[in-house]
Length: 129
Ligand code: FES
Image 1 (cartoon, rainbow, N blue to C red):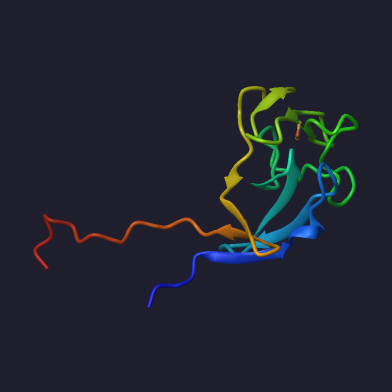
Image 2 (tube, rainbow, N blue to C red; image 1 turned 90 degrees about the horizontal axis):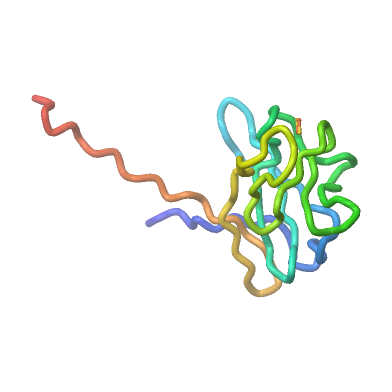
């Protein structure tokens, strides 16, 4: 039986419009990846919590990733600004790059991220085994 690709993050009401991000971790090796979900213009977006300039988390205080306007995500270290709905950096030292997005899903009052589907390992056709 296939593994369920949906991983519960939190209840929908834990992520308010342009409010504090809900932080969580994605299991990974050698260490878990910090991530967050936000709500912007009614829709939930998820990203790996790592600036594209340097590998630091964006928050200036835990879960605080929006700037004062509420229309941009901002890195607390050097001020890179990202569009909340695409992760595109539109100002700062990593302009033109994007936050790493997560596929999210909201259903029945809950928010999930959807694990990426990895392609099955195919045998090498040139292998003699
Ligand atoms: S580390 Fe984020 S802008 Fe420099």
